[in-house]
Length: 236
Image (cartoon, rainbow, N blue to C red):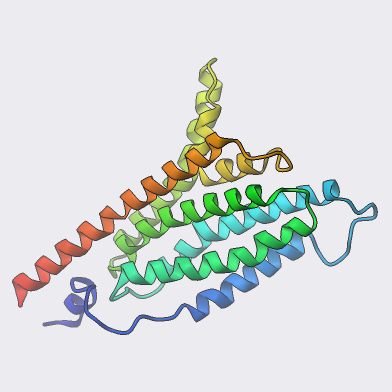
């Protein structure tokens, strides 16, 4: 059997998984650079929670950009994975651990309650889980076309909702604010709005729906994995 078949059509071969050391290092550089650009090492002239909030919001959006865009671009530009699903989940766990180092200390410079920070963390993790479900569809293959299509799906997921929200707002006179939750960037921005206030129950309901959708989307790589296994078994 040729190596291409082993590499692409048999992603469930039990080989050791790669620990994402390079990804963790790249994430550290990304987060440190984002922090320097938005908050920096010098305190504002009139230091207060309100003076930090604009920079904090941009920092969180840059962190989100790394999760839903930079991470997929990095993985889809590398060699195919033998166990793409597990690798994607391990990557996600590492990235989410890195984001906690950024998000939770922000309570020191804002007046956001713990529940708001928890909600923000859950929203970012939910969108990260959505992206992680799409990645194995591309990283399981060496085909450039498959990887381009996978990246297109990621961009459609991350930017399509914002575009739809903007278009709906231009052509419709009804309230379309709910469409802000269809994109990670507008969703997180909405979560950060009035950050000092207590979290409404409806916002947690949205997080539950987001996580359910993300879990359901994982059926796609699972089906793809099962199909690859059947193809491999049929050629043995």
